[in-house]
Length: 174
Image (tube, rainbow, N blue to C red):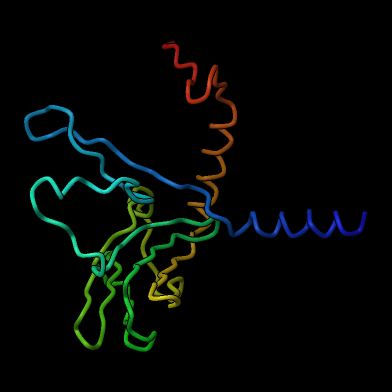
């Protein structure tokens, strides 16, 4: 019994830091009002677009920027960045952007956190952390308590919805 209790404790600890959302995407209308393309906020498109039909192919050595959130932090992973950690400079600017740049001027990226903008929360440099392993730069921003509470209530609302079949949610208008 002691071995199974240890396994349960490990599972509980891992759930605190595991990924909570694979994909969050929005479908925006095109300029003419028709169905537009999906805009990925969290995660990435599983099937790459068919560029081979046009005779073009994106290089597989280009940096790939993907957001993957955990329970306690917003997290971005930039694959194919081979430089050591001391080359990267990650900062929050006054315009609520996070800026990643290298001292060798080989990579520059400026992005925002839509969740923080929705709640009108300012970014703090102290909540930003950076790691590098296996040619991947990992930028994490610790979620404020407001966001954590909002996600908790959202998860409880999702658990109240009853699905008839896999993916079908009862959506009767009131």
